[in-house]
Image (tube, rainbow, N blue to C red; front, side, top):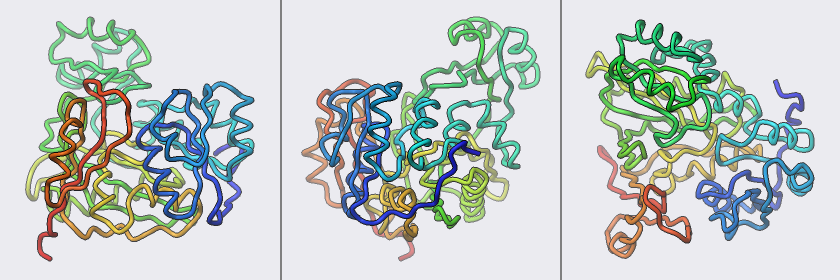
Length: 369
């Protein structure tokens, strides 16, 4: 439980929501908030951040700048964040002045892969085998348990394939351990999954929960490339995925939107799900909701952190979301000429390899009417 419990305040239109982080997620949150009459104040250390140009106010300062943080906290009615690697002390400092939603517990759990897995396991949620690794002896013992293979990951600050190494035989184990620093790691059992899926879920301050449809995700070079809805899974698997997401947000006492990433194993009647990780924020695999749902994940998050009723997450169209990565964004004109395509560009000044520059949602009539 937070040292500074949320006072349960419900905001009025015209209130200001502080957003930690000024990337594309912060940008889209600010835009969604503006459509509801909510102002956004972005706090981010990086100059020229994409969210700055669409927010009512922004502060460019370090996350460790206590004076700037206090001034920021006093200028807003509630604080949220667009990414999970906000320093823990930053969130705690802000929480002494103003509610932080989602709360510090969700941030602490998701920032450490081992803590996250322990939390999921304790909540009775199925996941791949895992082990804490702080030495070569730990790694060898875990490899014995997992058939000599696994994915070695840093406990903190890994995303889009960073901070991890695949181990397929003992010969590469020592090198992988050294590459990742030798300690504060976790080994995950290698799972022969059939597809990767996710569910974006929201929970309000009153405990109401809304789950979007299960999404099938395809990655290229460890970066999400496409998200397709509906996913190619059984109805039973889709229902189970939503129930898992509900259990996650309820167990955390969560407020806001989160993404729950899962592996599908088996097929047909033998399909099952294992949770991979949770992200305590709006999620890349939920961008399709901007154009295929009445209420997007971004509006849903702003509603939740404002203490407002959640919107209906029902989907009115089938959709494929494609990330525009690096030079993909140079094809913007062709995308605009596509029937049924909605282009979203993030306003980033420089195209770089592997950088998410925007996305496109390709809408189709919903199968079955």
